[in-house]
Image (cartoon, rainbow, N blue to C red; front, side, top):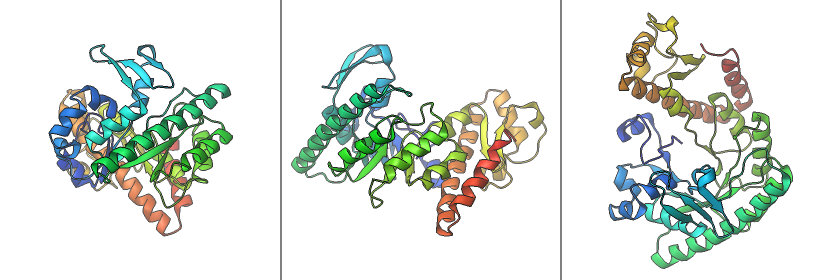
Amino acid sequence: MPVGTAATVKGLTQEALEQLGASIILANTYHLYLRPGHELICKLGGLHSFMSWRGAVLTDSGGYQVFSLADLRKITDEGVRFRSHLDGSEHLLTPEKAAEIQLALGSDIAMVLDECIETPAPRNVAEAALKRTTDWARRARNYFLEAANRNGNRAQWQFGIVQGATYPDLRRESARQLLELDFPGYAVGGLAVGEPHEVTCEMAAEVTALLPATRPRYLMGVGRPEQLADYVARGIDMMDCVLPTRAARHACLYTSEGRVLIKNTRYIGDRRPIDPQCSCSVCRRYTRAYLRHLFAAGEITASILATHHNVHFYLDTMRQIREAISFGQLSNFASELRARYVAGPA
C-alpha cells in the first residue's frame, strides 16, 4: 500500500496512482485529525470524495505518530494525551476517539488504537503494552459496532493490531486475545523498528500461524524490496511503507539490478533507463542521465519521476510475488530478490 499521509501520496497524483494500478493506499489519522480536521472532511463527503480517490483507503489509528512525539505525550489507561506538533494545542486520543475520527473519514479499513513501544523492550513493559492494547481494542470494537448499528454504516472494516514486542509467547497471547474480538482483519504492529529482519520474520510467523487465513493479515511499516517476499512467505497479505516514496525524494531508485543512487557522477552520461527491465512510463521515456541532471538542478520533476518509478517497482514486485505463488515458486523468487540487493547499489 503506497502511503498517502496527508491524503496524498507525495509526488504522485491520483491519476498516476490509478495508472500504476494501486488499488488501496494508506492515510494518516493523526495528521488528518489535526489538519484539516475529520469533521471538515466528513462535511465534504468523506476522505474518498475529499481527495478524489476511487480506490480503497486504510487509515491508521494515529497511535504511532502520537507515541513518536515522546516529550509531548502522556499515556494512561484512558488513552494518550498529547500536544499537537503544529500549534501545541492539547488533545486526548482514546480508542473511542480514534474510531470516531476514522468513521468520520469514511475509510474502508480502520485500525484500532494500540500502544507502540520501543524495541528492544523489557518483558514487563511489553506485557503492560499488550494488556493495554487488548483493553483498547475491546473498547474500540464496542464503540465501532455500536456506531455502525446506530448509523446503519457497515461499509468500514476495523482491524485489530497484535503487539508483544519480540517475545514469541506474548505475540501469540496478543493474537489469541484479539481473535476473541472477531475482527474482519488483523495487523502485526511494533515490528521493523530496528530489530533484525530475521526477528521480524519470526514474530510475523508466530502470529500468522494463529490468525485465520481467510482474513487479511497486515504487517505494518515494511519494508525494503528484498524483504517483501519473505513476509509473504510467513503468511502476510498486506504491507505499507514510506520507503519507495521517501527513497525516491532522496535520489535512491529501486531496480531489478539493485539500488541505483542516481546522483552518482557515473550516471552523468548514462543513456540507459533507470531499469532496462521495467515497463513503467518513466523507464520507457527518460534516461539515467536526465534523472541525474534533474536531481543536480534541484528540479521538482526529479522527485515526481523517481517516485513514479519506485512505486511501480514495489507494486510490480508484489505482482511477481503473486505470480510466483501461483506457480509454487515463492521460495526461489525470494532468494533471487535478496541476491539482487546483496552487492549494493547498481
